Amino acid sequence: MKTFKLLPLLILFVAAFSACDTEPEVVPQEIVLQHYTNSNSSLQNDNINDIAVDNTGVVWVATEE
Image 1: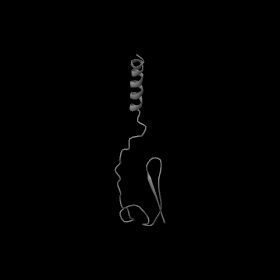
Image 2: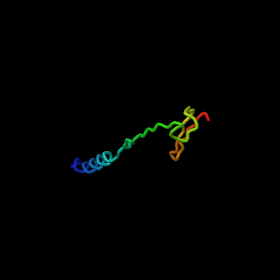
Image 3: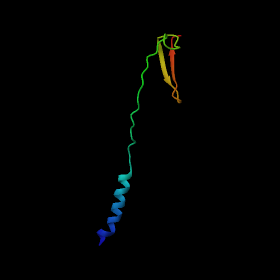
Image 4: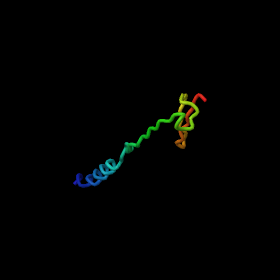
């Protein structure tokens, strides 16, 4: 008799934990590489000192000039 009373509780417990996804889904993103020089872009110099990406996704490049 006690088994039948605990069975719905056990089913609910197992269903609740199986529905929980503790790890976020990792979605691969495409990476695009482009080669920029002072001849094919507005860079003043080909010597790059620093590269930064701001919170809007804009890439900032620091050259010697």
